Length: 279
Image (cartoon, rainbow, N blue to C red):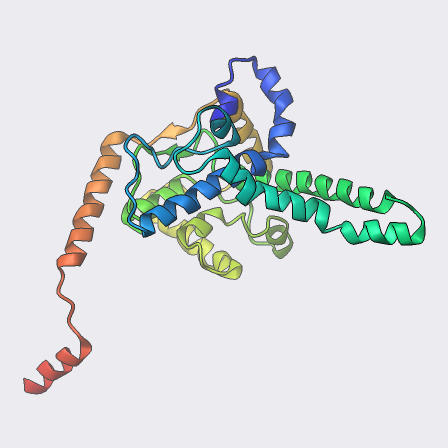
């Protein structure tokens, strides 16, 4: 979003470029950034130190690989490990039997070429569907951005999942299926490992809990969210920044709670039973 937003061109030019971006975003943004997260997880697991000056939350895109590079991997590694194998196998090797079949039937390369064209067209359509189903429920002038990271599954973590995500219309089985159950985006971010039906059951509970504590719970249809996302991408509107004072206080509270957990002495059930028996 930032690359499009910061382009020094009129808004109408950005709007004209939107179809290309929306139908290829997995290639140019989602794939390189997901691979960065994988590399980062491996570094942390191996105890490797993050290089000084590297902001781990910064997105890695094709543009950054081409013009600035990234400490996580090279452009060649990305092509040879991520994009290249998928491009070769999915689009050219997978329909290869049709080439042999066409030669056998005397129809030439027609079936093979048609299959390759259809696979590319299908990929553009799935990019578009993925953009509408995923990107639009994280962007808008009612969504919050944060300055610093937080501990996984801390109080700040759960709060941020609600403040930086949107649910689409929910409830109907057909509607949920058409959204790929990603219309329960808030619940998905709160509990990534839950089943789809569990998202559906937990949604009213989460909504009521947010209402009880005054936490904004945003739920709108996909068309409104798409319009708000386009406004962010073209610079017409901006996302909100969470107040620094509150962000710092919540992070400090998380640290205190984490320290309290570590200092708390674990009492085994067997010890409790022994103590009760002695009394």
